Length: 514
Image (cartoon, rainbow, N blue to C red; front, side, top):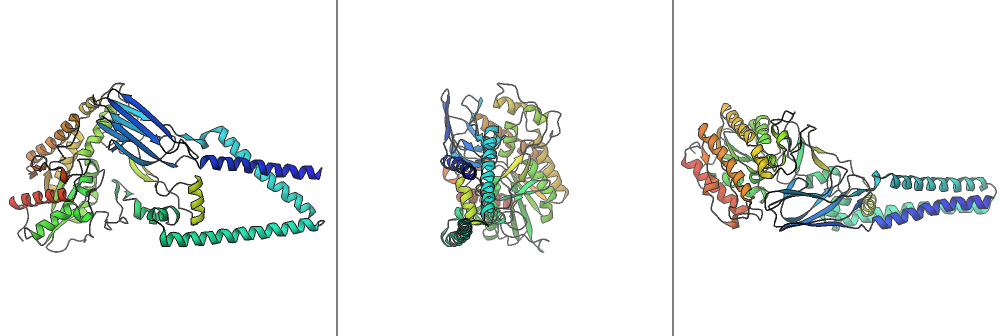
C-alpha cells in the first residue's frame, strides 16, 4: 500500500511536468497570424508575430502592407503604407489597421489575438497542474519524513537532495554572474535593456516623453537631447539672463524635428543663423515643439510652462495634428453635448503602467525567452481615452463627411487664445503657415484640409495684426529637404526653414538692435 501511495505522488509530479514541458515547448514556438483582404484596387495585408499570448499586456510585432490606399493608421497612429511596430495587447487593444481607400471610404481590419489567461479552460488546466505539483511534492516529503528515523537509505537520499539543491543554487548564481559580465562587456543596447537595466534606466533610453499634469505629457528630461526643463536642446537659464532676447518656437513634431538631431532642428538653426549671419549675439531660440502636440496642448503648455521662460517672442508652426482630431472623432464627440466638448477627446491622458523589473538577469532571460515576462523593449504606456458617452457616426459615414461635420472651430479658438495670451504678457507672436512636400503623393482631401488650417492661421494673423510667414507658399519644391513621409524635414530642410524665418524677422524689424 505504501509503495502504491508513493507511486501515486510520483505520477502526479510526472503528469504536471509533462503538461508544463509541453506548454513551454508550444509557447516558445509561436504560430503567426495573418490577414489579406482586397477592396477594389486596394490590397491590405496584416500579420502578427504570434496568435496567442499568455497574459494581457504582452507584446508582439505587428506588420502591415497596404497598396493603393490613401491613409493608414495602425492602432490609431498615422503610419506609412508598409511597416511594423511593437504592440502590447489586451482585451481592448488588438492589432488593428484603419485604411482610407481611394474613394475616401474607410475600412478597419483587426487580427484578434487569443489571450490564454482569459479562458476558463486554460485557467482550469493551469490550476490543476499546480495542484498536482503541490500534491506530489507534499506527498513525497511526507513519505520521506515518515521513514527518516527508520531507513538509512532515506537519510542518504535526503542528503543527496540537499547537495543537489546547493549545487543547483551555486550553478544558477554562477550563470547569473557570467551572464551579467558578458552583457556588461559585450551586450548590445537592446540586450542590456532586456536583461540588465532598471526601469528608470530604460525610460531614460527609450521613453522620450513623460506624464505631467494639465498638459498630458512633455519631453522626458532624462532622454538624450532634452534639458532638465523638458525641452529639446541645451539647458535654459531661469531667470532669463540680462540682455538676452528669448524666442520660443511651439508646434508638434515638425518643430521638435523628429527627422534631425537636436542641433539640427529649425529652432537650433534659427539661433545659429541670427547670431552668425545677422549679428544678433544675444538671441536665444528655445525649441518647445513636442511630437503629437495639438493646439490644445500648445495653448496649455504656453500658459503653464512656457511663460516661466520669460519669452520675448513666440513662433507658432503647426497644422497637421489638429487635423487628426477632426478626422477620427465622431461628430457627436467633437461638438455634441458631452464632457469633452471643446477638448481634444481623441487624445486622452498619457499614463505609464510599468512595474519595477526583477534584478536578476538570468530570471529576465528565462522569463522573456519563455514568454512569461513582458519584454522591457516595449514599455507599457498609453493614452487613456476619456469615458465620455459619444454616439458613433452612422454606418457609411465617410472621412470627408466627418471633416465637414468637425470644422476647425477649436483649432481657430485655441490659436486665437494662444496669440491673445502671448500679447497680454508682452510677448511678440509670429505665425507661420505649415508646409509639406507638395510633390509627395497626398490625397486631395488631406491637402484641402491642410489648406483650410493654413487659411485659419492667415485669418488670425490678419485680424490680430500679427506678423505672418507664409512658409507653405514660399518654401522651395525640393524633395531632398524631406523625409519619406513628406511631412518632416531633414537637416537641409530645417536649415532652409530657419533661414527664411531669420530673413523675415530681420527684414520686418521684429528683433532688437544688436
